[in-house]
Image (cartoon, rainbow, N blue to C red; front, side):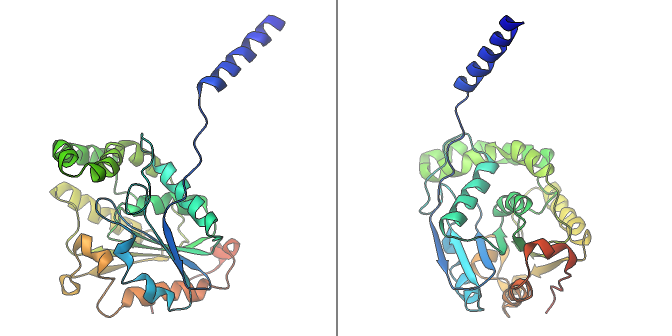
Length: 287
């Protein structure tokens, strides 16, 4: 018996020694402006996207009497690249670490563009102080399935060598994210989106999907998500707004600033509301 116990302990110790601990989540480059609650956190997408995508939006939101934080995701803008392999959970952990470094405890409204919404999903699922979300032509829950993830890899992989040759820094940031799509799809598929979280979906009339089946699937996912709760609504950023997928973040949510007003609605009605009361509070997102 003692021999068996000793052997078991030895195996456990061996496993502990051979498995290095998770590295501490890095603090990302971020700018915090304004005062008050909640804090509106802006999350950009992939590629050439940076916190600068929000430069025309964040200041106007801050003027509404709330605090804003824009930040560069790892490998984008001024933020250092994560060590490979890429993991979505590391992105969420880095955002958490950045919030802590700036003393931001909540309540928080997440505004996410494109792939940034995947980060927002994970953060919202783990933080009860997230009290609202705005998804700007984003990766809505249910969009990135295993089939879609594999299709994206098949579509983009032939371009990797050219990207590495022409833009090595961009390639180092983006390619690991795309290669990890299947695992990311699995991670997102296990999340349960809070039905009582006030969420505005801003859809560009001309989105980012290129394959017809992905376009159809994305539209269906958005419809299911919005119809799944009375706390969710959708805005369409039409060509009149000069949106498109990339410009939907840079140009704002609408010529008449409807998106800003809706963020403000969440901000004002949630300002004095403790996150623990979220489930008993009904928010009308229309202004």
